[in-house]
Image (cartoon, rainbow, N blue to C red; front, top):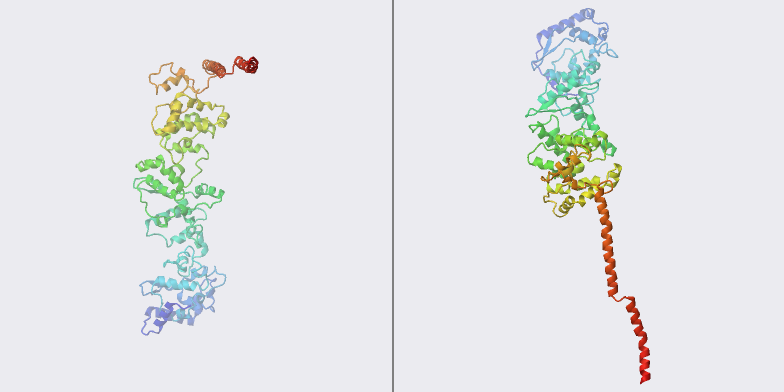
Length: 586
């Protein structure tokens, strides 16, 4: 192979006036003269396992000069090269006893122009250039750098790629592959000890300290294209255990467990529904923002970072985002109430699970912000059944308030429509029969004064305020207890206090006039039942009697009396006879 440097060297060979160092000429001539007179004296104490110890070996003249040679060769750059060949180290190296076949000096130094004696000036101007020329010689036996350069084959555009001597050493004491692979991190750190970018340096220092079994630099810097593209993201953030500090003094962890993503709705759940699991780059798709080294965060606190990540969710969940814009949380954030719940607050970031399985998760999620309300719900008849008995039939937060488009519960419209929320369960005959609860609860409410008025408001002017009681005025909102519980707001002992919320002048007898949600029966309110029964018989009987009397009178007045009908018939029968008698008389 012809290299530009070889042509440069050839030009220097024929150029007259090149002066050799006198000392080098003297040494070379003396050694050559000694070897001619007594070659055995020069090679007598060479290691026996070195093939060049054989006087017939082509390496003998080379060893005779370069063994224990204290001289150096100066390069135009001012750097120097030692002329000592380290024969003892070469003998035990991979090219000596570690070689399958004995190697001679001329097996590597094959360029007759470069290595013939007397040697010509080195064409290399610097030590780096000299190493590059040696590396070219290595490739005569070993795989070319284009095929063998562990961890660098994907960085072909980098002008500073290492060559053979950069990793295996420059000289005859070549570091073997076994030594390099025994500690691959140290091998890489031979060059990569510092980085211009502080972020890159900090990350690599932490990663190198956290490498586990079978992990090293090539876990990220592989010789083959990495697939999928987010493997680097997963490997890096799995090993990172540190955090970055924000301007507010808060810290954000850099650790992300890939297993948590695989087990989330974006991982295994996607597979169950025959979709491809999401990768890191599906969400963090802005290459300029998320390429490594990452851009510096533009937020000052952790809350701002969480809200900023909401934009990622909305890229896929556009319909849900539209609903959220109509809800109370988005409205609060628009008023700069940044604590209002966002996507990540309810669903998490990487370990996103089904929000409704198990059902208890719903109340727990809302309770992260609404802790006081959640404490009341836990003690209620609904919360005790859900959390204590794992009963899925009882209502949770979203059944009453909705999911994303949550309406403000303080509005008049929410108030007048709230009985319908309760009716969703308490008017369901199948569900109520399961727990032996009467559906008359809702029907009796609608039939009484309170319910009738509220129903009218709901159908005609739902936006107008009404002071008529709705379900939660009497039973409570989140702290609803069984009607027979001693702390219930509707138990007889507490009912007066409940009524006085709207009727402050109510006396002790005031609640007694209310029949509650039971229809009167011999068991419940028997007096009312029998009075109702009396009127149920009396009123139809009286009205029926009146109807019979009036009907008979009408019948008579319309000429259907039997006596009158009979008289009319007699008159009609006599008329012809009278006419005959009148004719005879005439």
